[in-house]
Image 1 (spheres, helix red, strand yellow):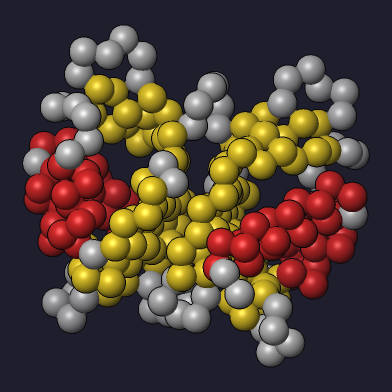
Image 2 (image 1 turned 90 degrees about the vertical axis):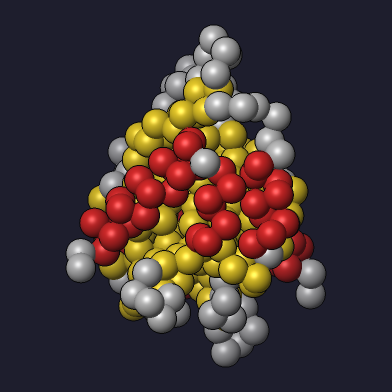
Amino acid sequence: MDPDAVAKAFVEHYYTTFDSNRAGLANLYQDGSMLTFEGQKIQGAQSIVAKLTSLPFQQCQHSITTVDCQPSGAGGMLVFVSGTLQLTGEQHALKFSQMFHLMPTQQGSFYVLNDIFRLNYA
Amino acid sequence: MDPDAVAKAFVDHYYSTFDANRAGLGNLYQEGSMLTFEGQKIQGSQSIVAKLTSLPFQQCKHNITTVDCQPSGAGGMLVFVSGTLQLAGEQHALKFSQMFHLMPTPQGSFYVLNDIFRLNYT
C-alpha cells in the first residue's frame, strides 16, 4: 500500500479517535511507546493515555493542514503533521505540530513508538 | 552522553552550518538520506544540498525555540525542533517546525537519515 496513503489513514484514525474517545487511543501505543507533550516526557501506553485523558478540556476538534511521511529505516514510518486544535468554548483555535514514528504490528497494522507534540504559538 | 545534550549539540551545529555555509551540510547527509521540504521530496546528500543551496535567499538566521528528542528504536534519535527563520532584508521572521532522524556513524558522530521541514503559517 502506498506509504502516503497509509500515513494519511493513520492520521485520520488517530485524530478522530482523539476527538471522540481519547481513552480509545490506548491500543495505538505499547509498553515501549514514548510521548513528549509540550516538553513533558511520558512512557508506556497506560501513562500516555492517562496524560491525554487528563488534558484540561472536555471536547476538542483537530483540523489537519499538512501530513508528510518518510520510511524511518527500521521498518517504520515517520509522520509529520501540522494543523489546528479547536477547544470547545475557546474563541481561537491553537496551532500545533506533531510527529509520530509508527512501527508495524504483527496483525498488519501500526502502533505509535514515538510521539512528540508541540503547540505553535503565534 | 546525555541524549538531550546530543540533540541540542546537533541542532546547534546544523543551524550554524546552515546559516553560515549551506554547502557544508553535505557531510550531515548520506546517499539514503531523505528530505521533505515544504512537501517536496528529495533523496540523497547531493540532491538535498543542491536543494538547500538553491533556496531563494542569500542569508538567513535560524532561532531555535524548542528542541525535543527521543530514541527511535533503531539505534537512532528523533529530534523535533521549532523556531523562527529570519531572511536578510525581510521585515518579519518565518516560523518553522522540523524533524530529524539521526543515525550514528562509525566515527561516533551522527548523520541525518530523515529530515522533514515545514513553515508554520500564522
